Length: 163
Ligand SMILES: [Zn+2]
Ligand SMILES: [Zn+2]
Ligand SMILES: [Zn+2]
Image (cartoon, rainbow, N blue to C red; front, side):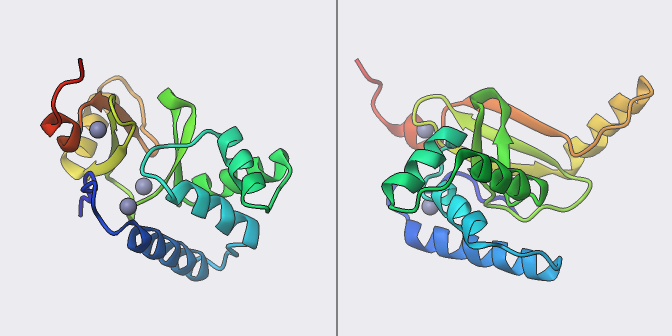
């Protein structure tokens, strides 16, 4: 299942609601606790479909009247990334709430819009197989491969070019 890019007028409150619900279910199923801070960090990430830097999250929490020490925010992010409830987007040095449920042998591809900053996740088993084969050819074993791909999202492609 690929979510793709959200339409500009989509019901985002619902996105956030569904995402938090999925995260709670995933944690429950794995016997882990989505502590209040982990939940708030995920909520802050889920507020936008563009990735946020760790420091932006710290600021966001402070503005919301729920300040947390940066170290605790980093630890919450580490947890969310390890559980694949959020992702680190290396090329942006930022984090994104996961809008997708992952399973083992897929390659996750992050499509990064250069104009609006939105990131969509798509996954492919076929790419996973090809990549695995190419890597094995040089004696390499891939682990949770991720690709980051820049371009323009459908909404930005439709928009008139800026002058
Ligand atoms: Zn949304
Ligand atoms: Zn994901
Ligand atoms: Zn865009």
